Length: 242
Image (cartoon, rainbow, N blue to C red; front, top):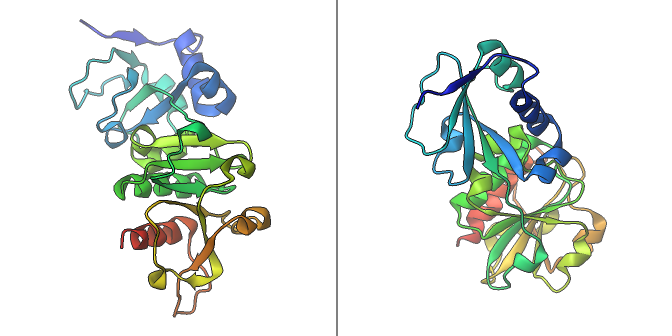
């Protein structure tokens, strides 16, 4: 069946796409989020519709309906400099604290602000087979376009668990990544735990740090005092496999 072409700025679908791109409340109210790029769509089972820039060919097989957008409309919605000409709308799935399994491993993000960091950590948690990523209130929205793109479809492959307060994690085995902790390469890991990654500028909050069973640090031997949050998380998650 031939795909329809949208050319008007006033088309309801265009307004819907713009709202999904810019408004986090709108995303959760509608249970949908945007994915841009071919690689970010890899193995995503929740695609509702694909929008192609006029003149772009669909590079994969899909059962989702496809709509063409005039080039000027697509370019106003796209947030990437070198777009591949494809945006998809996907179902947004979130979980709450009841989905946390005491026998599994999780990552908790405490007030993380950088979308690239969050997306990279989600992607890394998927790569190391963690059960979920817990995101505390005050962090960037995990379903914002920049986080989704950095996660490389990770938000669709791992449980994204949203919590309002750290008190929801009472009784959970928390381990903080913190520069005052014991070296991560000397730590004896338990079978199940929640690794806490703190805010880029301020680290893990004092309140949450006090609730952690252990604190782990990454030994640094160069002329730099700290690491990027996503890099630090990657090292800690890798060490936890040992």
